[in-house]
Image (cartoon, rainbow, N blue to C red; front, side, top):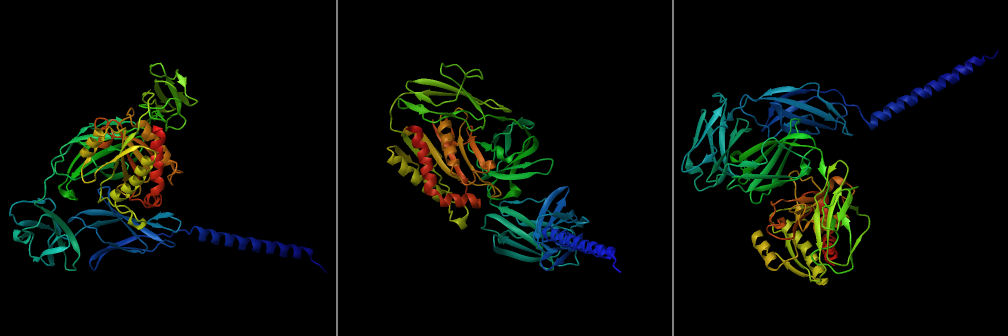
Length: 573
């Protein structure tokens, strides 16, 4: 006798088994693609040899652990490790300081999971009191005071000048005095290391001997509470005597932090808009420092607000207006995408009711063209005036490549110093310009900016062109930028043409965040200052401390030089 329902049950069972197997396979496959992180915790901080070590329990599938150490709601240290035993190599506090230690596990896809706990850690090692005078003068002995000193434990002080050990002694009490004779004849930073019985450094203290004292610095403009659109900020300050490094630090109430080195001229600093975020409050701190002696630096701070709205870029012309051949066809351009250009030829200021630029203009006679660019959700551009004069003249160009022979780039791609590489670019520019019949002068790298601008004016240069490469504080920034003094500078048009043409061959031009564009020095750069040179510009050809930018420069020195030269040639022909 047959039982058809048994066959049906068998089929159903087989289908169910297939589905179960497929589900198990799918779950396993997804787990392989994105492994789920297991729970983990922070256990303890222990001393291992010359280090403090943080121990974590293991998080299943974790490939990396990130540890953050906080104090008073400010992050002090960050450590990354592939293991759960993390050496806190440079972690030091002051005696009785309390820290919060947080940990994050990451899987191979970068998915994160926080530890199940936060560890509160109190620093109980003896430390050197920081509220002591760091500056040494005369023949005064070096005095230290030890916080948390335990007479039952063994400690020693070592004194170093760079890598040279000057002195070593065991300490027997809270007051330590080191004879001046130990450091006699030295100048600069002398570092005292406090070591415990395990030879672990528990604290350091820096003395500064016969060191130039930095004068007190004060930001005079803008004033605290300043609010502006997202744009470059020109900061003016007084003081800072003897400082040879200046830094701008930005902090915001949501924990954002950035620090960049800046290079002021005539007590002015241009801070690029690229380091700001829109619609955000910042505390901006100017730090004036001798060498890297942060402990004796002078600072001044202001609070500012960066809003959202931008200004439309001004209109630039394709050819030089000061002398131009009759019959030359010119174009009007703006770097603001989608902007409408208005212009007049009767001497009146253009408005959105004026002529709309749609076609190139042929210059057959002396004519004054005034321009305005307008775009949505931006302020109108400046009104630019171009007085075209029919005349023929041999252009005179002054090239001023960087003389910074200690500004190093990414050595692995062959970038040596800014001076060496930018002079190679300038060599190409000079050759091409001379082949085109231009008169070319060049700066003397052994002199300074005052000599360069004076020579440029003496030879009556039609264009003064400073050629540099850039650098950033974290060595991650990319892009090209070019400086002129202001929106109506005579150099605005040629600089705009140079920038746009170079941008067209830049290997990062598919990422608009690298499009740094025209910058306005507003008196802060001597070679892009209308008061010093009538038509001057300074270009930063990518970032020599970022791998991709440095590689692009080194692979394209000839091409970059030809591109710059062709922009100048087309502008004056």
